[in-house]
Length: 361
Image (cartoon, rainbow, N blue to C red; front, side):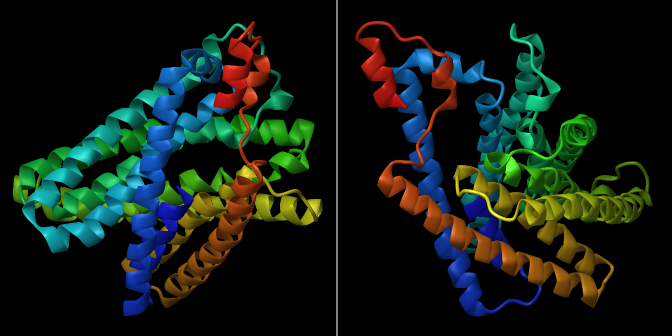
């Protein structure tokens, strides 16, 4: 997710350069490689050790990270539309649309099933143990919705583009309101039980993601509707313009609300002062990156030089954070300290299976 967001940011910056375009392509290729490796390793892990999958899916925290799959795939779909479709033509368009459809299905399944599993579990969950990670499977629908607007722009058939836009609005409607409800619970948790411990402090940035992705998606979908609705005679002659204006208004409101959570998150980090590096540091990249995309997209639509410059500054900060987190992750991979499976703590392996499960972790 973080690597894909960086490639997208560098490719779509309002103040861009040719060398940044080629850097974005290199990072895009790296992201595809990382995504494939992660999928293959995860597939083998759960095929060879099915008992680990059962432990993972029932874990109240680790199961939530299944939602990273549709979000990571959405960044690949976006860059494929930006880079590969103009270069490779019609087959690339069909391929991008197909992958997006798969991504949409995965995002809906994760957004609906994982919260239900959390509700239907036998173990009681305390409010004090809640983290913003609960948002991860839900936000996948919002991210996929914004990706659908990008895909709709490259589809040659207006009817196909219309289907994509309508489905994207449905995804947006599933994800964003549900994310807002979870944020109410999370705000209560922060108020009653204070900010998370240092090991989880970076998770306070996760609520920024729905606002950034939601605002960006509202604008892109409105812009796509402005073009496609008149071509397909959908909802009358003025519907496209109405959706575009409403999308821009909603995006501006979401961006403003995102400022509140950006302040809470930044103040929490400042108050914490020092905190250990862990894999959770990747929580810096995607949410802030989504907020950067929303910011400079507002600058493009208004138009406003202030929002374009501010969005560019935030995007460059995300790139710097990505470099820092990447270096820290590589060090952790080499030392072996980065690989942890919290769900295995709840397992009680017997006999020879114990060594196998430990190795799988």
